[in-house]
Length: 187
Image 1 (cartoon, rainbow, N blue to C red):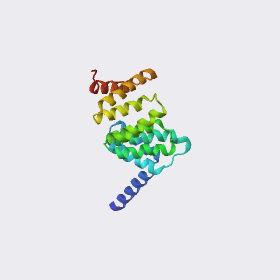
Image 2: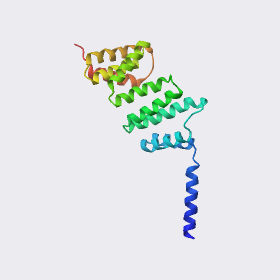
Image 3: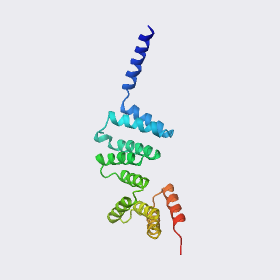
Image 4: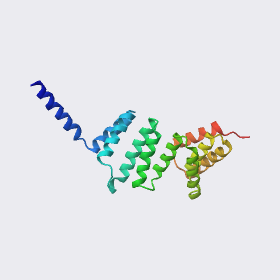
């Protein structure tokens, strides 16, 4: 009798686990991410994407957020290659996603692929000379490879363009100002 009860309980729990939807996994992943349980969040994002791998057109923006959050969890777990996979997945259904492109640059910086980041930033700057984030990331990379003169020129240009843009982003300004203060000296 005891073995029948255990079998029934196991079957019930198995059915309950398998009845979870992608939405259930995404909600769980976000809760775990908010609690800084990045490994648990990554697993739940993976399960949610496995149940619903191709978003419908009307879900593209939502999936951009989900893949971004999954990538951020991976970055917080020092899995920059995994983060790149998530950010590139966004570009499969939203090829012009500016956020995904920025996150790709950040993940490549995490991988210390400074040459690739600088090349991409130079390309972005040639298309949009007011792209202050491209100047920032190129400048950051130049500083990392001890090209402080070039790096500081880009960081100062990033600050100039950022201020002119009138964008309000205190975190970006704080990081930009710190990079300039720590790496660029007036002669």
